[in-house]
Image (cartoon, rainbow, N blue to C red; front, side):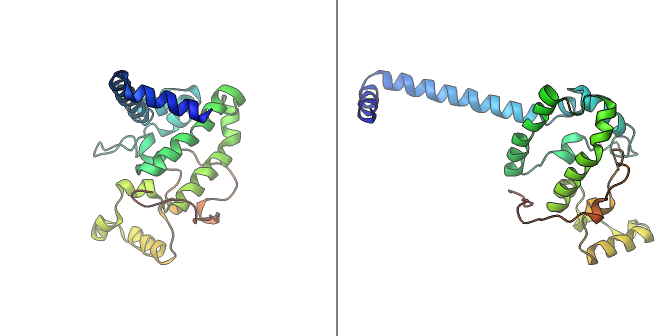
Length: 207
């Protein structure tokens, strides 16, 4: 069987059709890459994340409105993908594949398709996000908030003291800055009480 396949390939390459097949392959690859890139970009927009399904539109998006990440004195906004979609290539691809779980939930299990179900699942969902952010040292936070560029002189005395305490105790952003754009689940451990294995969570510029 393999010999027959190889023989067919040799005849195809040797013939005039080889150039046509090559051009078709190149064109198909370009179209495929274009569709892949377009999908990656579109699924990382606020329009897709915040309003494309009723689970988000009726829950997370409503909580996000008018928070400091939505409206502030400078007009600089942090939208869904800024906080929940990795900006580095490899983590981005991994996150997109993991989003298949959201499709399964939306179309099959319907686990958060009502407000009551969403609130009931909030501790589990929040815990998952907090664990991920603790594991990668709040990578998505640091994409916008560069600690090296912060001016302590423009921070309050309380903020300076808390940041110093956080550095000394090797804390990460989400240990203190959580519940900024979404409601905090009632009961259960907060980020500071969670133990996270950081060994397998990528957090560099590429990984």
